[in-house]
Structure formats: C-alpha cells, structure tokens
Length: 209
Image 1 (cartoon, rainbow, N blue to C red):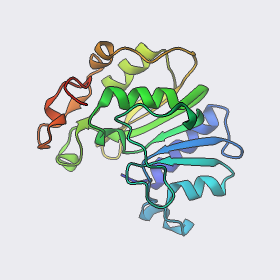
Image 2: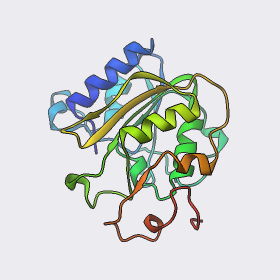
Image 3: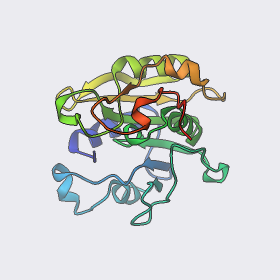
C-alpha cells in the first residue's frame, strides 16, 4: 500500500515511544514499500531509502526480489540466517500472503525480544475489495497481542478513513509463536471476492502446501 505522510508520522511516534531511534537500528521491511505522493518532497522512491538516510540498517523482504529486496516467501518458513530485527514494518504485505499462520509466525520470529512490530493493514471495505487474500480488524490485532504476550506501544486504531488498522507491539517475551488453532481464533478474514485456491482454505493454512 505504500507509506504516506500519516503513516510516517505514526511510525515516528512508535519509534519514539518504544525508546528506539532510527540511527543504528536494524529494520526489516515486509514488501518493497513505495513512498507516496505526500512524501514526494524527500525525492526518494522507497521507504527503505528514507530509513537508511536516518541511519538505520534496512533489509527488505519481497517475493519479487526486485531493486535489492531479498526474494523470500512469507508463506514458508524463513531461514534462521535472516536474523532478528529491532523494528519490523508491515505496511500492506501480510494480507497478500496465502498462508496466514506461517506469515504471522515469520513476523514473530523476525522481531527480536525488545523490538517492535508495526502494522498498517487493510480492513474489509470497498476500497480494498479485490486487493488481497485477507482482511484484518482491531479485534484481530488485540487478540493476537493478548495470545502472544505482546505489549501495545500505542492503542490499536483505525486509520486512513477507517480503511486500515494500525497497531504497534513490543515483543517482550522470548517464547515461540502460538499454535495454528490458537491463531485461527484471532480471526483474519478471508476475502471472498478473490478467486484463489488459498482464500477458500482455513486461515491456519489447512490444505496449503
């Protein structure tokens, strides 16, 4: 979906409240995130370049693997060599991953203990009707945080004309991600408008290779 001015301001708030700083931080970005028109004054194409200008070391994971991104599939287990990061940014990628359980387990594993995970992802609405495999809600994010023992950096809230949900969590405990059945209870919503084999399967990945 890209990074807008409001998204950058929200991200800056999270980094400050979490007691972190861009300078010296390790950031993993899910999807090659474009800077939108509201941030055109930076004269940059990608969000990662802005973070790098601020002193962060950035890794971008994108299935297409273009423009220097690492080509990895979030629907499959990631290699342990990929490491853990201070800040994880998911601004419109997880909804495109057919196996939601494996995707969110990867998200959990990519964030170090004491790091933060920042999400801005779509809710079910006309604007995103054919955009993705899955939709989310405040309830999904709240339940996920409770089950995983995450601590909220800022309140979970609706943003972008109530078309997205924004959440930021501290990973405060060193423990494995929750099981598939428990994850399914969080309630990621399959998109019935997307004609895809995966979208008709259970959220926990039953029947998905």
